[in-house]
Image 1 (cartoon, rainbow, N blue to C red):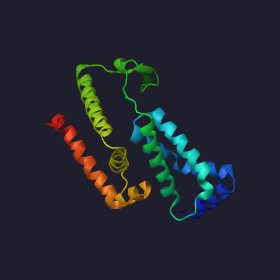
Image 2: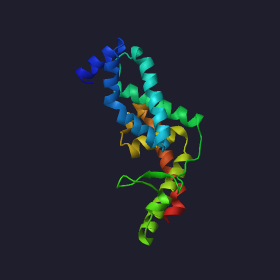
Image 3: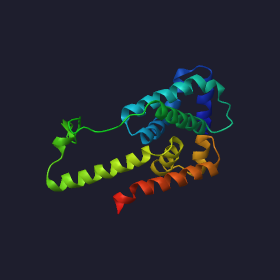
Length: 192
């Protein structure tokens, strides 16, 4: 933790909103990235992001500098993700008619953006692979999915994940081992 970050935390603990906003700015992309990797939806990730920083705002006075601020924040993030998933189970899909901004800035539907047989085939295969991976992730326990996501999508080390999830490195390795086994089993027929 840098001296500047330390000063921001102390000021935020005393009620300085500007200092708290600076802390948010330091970590907002990481929190949003973890949330998105876990839920796979921008809207759900934003909900998690808001809940995380609401909890941080309410609990910052209790932060005792026994760990890095980032570790404390990511522990809150993982807990919110796990809670969010158990509270809101929904099937995510993308409609061919759903509009998004294309490369030229014009709104287009997915159906309009798919042109040509070659592009259609590669996009269909990519979508199918993504769907199979997403389906496999949904079959994991919340803890397995969180560990798998943090390790393989966010690149965190086992030690960092154990700190974020407030469990031993052995427990993280166990979650990761079984998550990997389940994902291999789920994707076995698809990849053969």
